[in-house]
Image 1 (cartoon, rainbow, N blue to C red):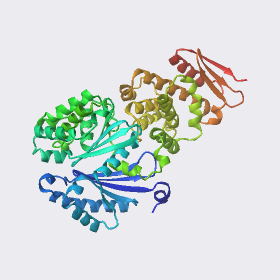
Image 2: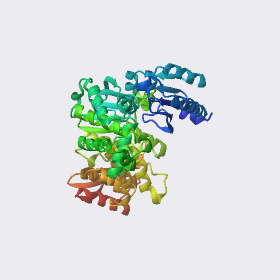
Image 3: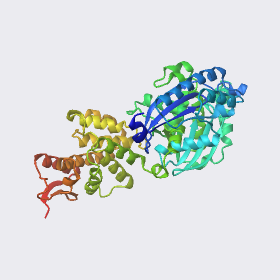
Image 4: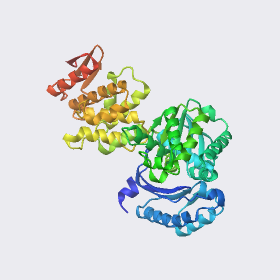
Length: 496
């Protein structure tokens, strides 16, 4: 066993054994942001026909025994410990669910297999959502093949949960393939969920593969500039139009629809039906998609309470700094040094600025000709989950400008599309400020300590003689550029 696997980067693995599909995820390390190094899915449809027979689909069971043996072999080969299987609605509801689990245990000796209750499944899903959105406030709706879990969320605190038989496979079976009947069933089931209107005006968080597929369809059709479901957000009107378009289109149209996953063509009309009914029942103000759910919730339960309480965006920045930065003392120094540029910043703006300072040296080992674009893409597309899409765009833009990109650079177009003008201006100021700081200090807090930047009626750079810093041509040029953006004059003086 390699030392980095046992000491620095331990691995763990979990299988999500659902009604529609089974998925193995292997995580590496114990960090606030889960790092998935292996992810494999098989569509088995164990829950197909369960509504009529009360039993797991026989073909799916046969396939599952083979697939699960493979997953156990992968976990062993990757030295993942612990390795655990979480079985959800189909297995817990089927008459032969316990016998199926016994067969699995015989083929996978020593591997824990947990049949989750609806409440446990909801708890894992909520913890997964909160992994990426710790302040989530509203209602979580986790749709699978067999069930729909609803969980109240109050500013990051998990509340009451409810399980309904509205998974896409089960709803299709209950409705006999009739979408009108599915709408009536969804309305009837959701009418039993008391208090849904209490989240009116708040967020509706969508977790589950069918929801993710809906998001990808919308992203493809709208030409969205970032191919990332996590934190993708729609207005209620856009969500209603999406759901209506999916549920109202014949199969031949769905199959040709941009972004439509081939394996989801039969399921998505039922997911769309449930979504429209949820929108009507809740009066949600925003619809937010989450790529994190049950599996990440399982991972989060392995972390200490202290680590779980960390800010995921700042944690991602700090992890990037540890891996690629040259001096861990530099980000805190930059945070203090750039504070004078933003006298009226909000707590959220301060948080973004702090994250940018932590990420600011991430391109130090890249080729000089490509640092700006490489840093931009690295930050925009990083796996850290605790960032909205506008936040990703902001941080990526700051890094590109810190590495001398011009604000008009073509590769910055996706970020411009995701940001409002005021955020773009703030990112430009911060990026130019960090560029100046690194030019002065050579990336060291000791040299930066010999300088001070003050913004007001003018932009004043104060330099302490004898500390190795001076106002050379590159410093003067970058100071002037920053002052031009701020709309003030640039001045330098020696500190006394």
